[in-house]
Length: 376
Image (cartoon, rainbow, N blue to C red; front, side, top):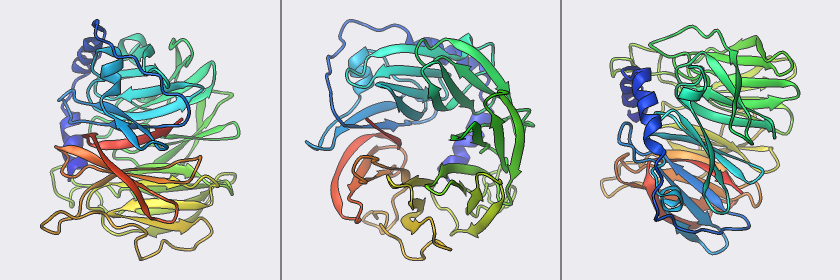
């Protein structure tokens, strides 16, 4: 399992290597390419391979069906870094967390040019391997982390470090991880993925953890808030620390529905054993869930259970082996579904674009291990 191998490798990485990697991306040359992409478009972040420094960024125009690969390096004459983790768009800026390089890039969404950056060395060790960015307003943003028991606070306009929230997360196998951030009123829900079962509750007025929700299943990986203020959480079920599935949890993903106001768990549904990755997205109205669990499934947020029949089946190779669906998101403007296919985790991945009815609209090659989509 790719995620298990990657987690084991990450445990052996020291902070010094992270900081060194972060310093290797500050020497742009003279062959920068000019871009000017106005209107709506889709960014596809490709992780690359761990410690290979081959993360890339692609850009896709849904109206023309034109894809351009490697646009970060082409626009800035520098590499994106090692292990691109997530991309978030806010007010014409895309924030890209490059985990193993310990850096958050801010780029212009029309020109793809770097506007600023926040590196691990600027944050008093409170940021080590950034995972996800949530922008609250023009002056405050938050970044979660793979190793550090802190959530970094920074100014998204200036990229200046502002402080941190201590999570007091106990370390497990070297991790004190925080992952995705979902806002609800003056509360932030933050899931803790690595060897954890916790959803942290953060009060944004106090800038402190005030409560937590403990799940029955391990490793909450994806989290969303629907139109009824129900928090949906998808776990991957954990996996073996020695390469087997027996030494850590049962490897069975679970889907939870939690009332955001009362924080009460309303439903807990075990899913099929995960063979690749799990992921989740909502449609533009927030009333329909799409879930990767080997294939792609669809359910209304009012349904009692996930359908047993896939909405879209994962592609198969010539030997009948299922491809690895690795990333998912839904275009908030037209409802089109974007699926990332890692193929074999080593060659250029494929992106599939489907209509909301599940009809294939387009497909195209991007970089290695495409995993994250952002829409402008």
